Structure formats: C-alpha cells, structure tokens
Amino acid sequence: MKLDLLKELTEDNPDVQQVELQVFVDNLLVYREARANVKKNGSIVLHPRTSQPIENPVLKVQAQTGQIVSKMRMIESDRVIKLLEEEEAAEAAAALLLPGAAAA
Image (cartoon, rainbow, N blue to C red; front, side, top):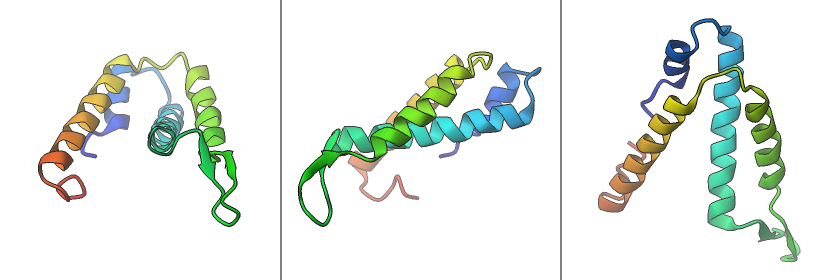
C-alpha cells in the first residue's frame, strides 16, 4: 500500500487530533482486512481440528472494528476511502496481470 491514509485524512480533517485519526486508520485497515477474509472464506468456515462448520472468527473482528469506525463520524473519510478502494482495485488488477507483482 502506497497511500498514506493518515496524511490524506489529516488534509481532510485539520481540526481532528492525530491520535483520533490514527485510531480510525488502524481500525479501518483491520476492518477491510477482515472484510476481505470473509469475502474469500465465507461467514461459515471449517474448524481447523474438527472440520465442523463454525462461524468465521474474523466476523467478530469485522463487527468490532466496523463499530469503532462508524462511531467516529466526525472524521471526514469519503474521499480517502474512495482513494483506498481505487488503490486496492489497481493492486488486484496488477496481481491478475502479473502474479506476484502486488506483493512487491
């Protein structure tokens, strides 16, 4: 990821404390990672030892971080989230064209 989320959010939220913006960024990134996991693996997964179906444990992480982000309504983030989505889409497209390129 090349996008500096904290820098971009600071530009859009000059009156918000840096620590609040950092908490927002940290939780947003964890939320998006959890969302990608659920999208890839589904909300029901197999337990690693018993192979029984269980709720994907990442759903709880997604719910917790999503709740934190949604409570931080004072942070203007629409532009930055759009930039993040564009960057993720470009990385995904690059990975399809050149496997291993997204990791670089």
